[in-house]
Image 1 (cartoon, rainbow, N blue to C red):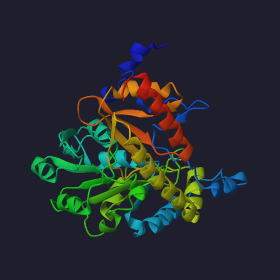
Image 2: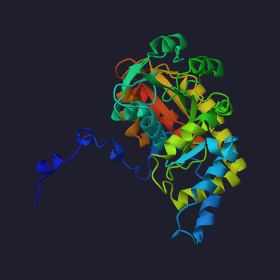
Image 3: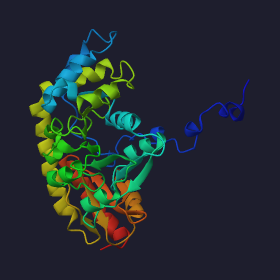
Length: 361
C-alpha cells in the first residue's frame, strides 16, 4: 500500500494539495438560514423545468449539444457559430484561459473584481497585471491601455463588476477593444443591468463575452454558461472541450427556461426593484455607504466598525452576507445578495440590532 507522501511525487506541482479546498469549501445553507452571500436567485427557476423532468424519458441518453447551441444562439441574438456552451460560466473562463494563456503571458485585470479568470490564467502559466479601478470603481481605461505590453494576451473586465456592482460603459469597453488585444467581458449579471456588448462580437473578433444561466434564470445548481466569441475562437475552444460537457437535466433546464423567459425576466424585474429599495434603506445606516449596483446584489462600504465583525453578528441572526475586500487590503465592505422583500426586511432588522450591539450608530 502506497502512503500519501509517496503518491504525491507523482502529482504535477501545480496540482499539489494546498489544504484550501476551494471548490468544496462553500458550506451548505442550514434550514432557517437566509443566505444572501452567494448572489443566488431566491425567486427560483422556472416551474416548467420540474414539470418537464417529472416524467422525462431520456436521462439515459447523451444531451444534444448542437441543439443547445442553437437555443442559446437564439437567446443571445447571434449566429450559432459564435456560441460556445459550457458547464457553467466558470468553465468558460477556464476554457478561454486555457486557449489563450501560457507560460510568460500576461493578463490584465481590474481589481477589486471577480478573481476566477485570474486564478485560471495563473494556473495555465500566465502572470497577472493588476490595474486598480478608480475611487468610484470605474475601470481606468488610460491605465489599462498603458499596461499593455507585447506579452499581453487578454484584458478581462467583469461587467457589471463583482463585488462592487459597477457598470462599465460601452464607450470605455470599445476604447479598450480598439487596442486590438483580446478583451473578455464577464457579463454574468448583464440581465440585471439591461446592457450587453454581445451584439458587437461579430464586429470585433478580439471581443469575447461570457454569460451564465445561474443568475437571471436561477440555474446555479444546474451549471450552464456560454461564451459568444468569433468563430475562429469558438473552434479553438472546441478542441479543448470535453465531450458531453453539459448533462441532460441542465439541457432540459435551458430549454424550459427559454420557453418561460417572460416569467424569469419578471423575476429579474422584481430583483431590480428590490435592489433599489434595499440600497435606499441601507443608506439610512450611519455605518454603511451603498455603492450604485447594476447586479443582483448591493455592496456597501463599512464606514464605522469592522466588516467581518458585522458579517459575523448578522450570521448569528441566521442571515449570511459577505465581507469583501474592495481594494484596501482587507474586508472593508459588505456585499448583500438581493432576495425577496421578506429577506430584505429580516436583514434590515438584523442590521438595526447589530448597530446597537456593536455601537455603530
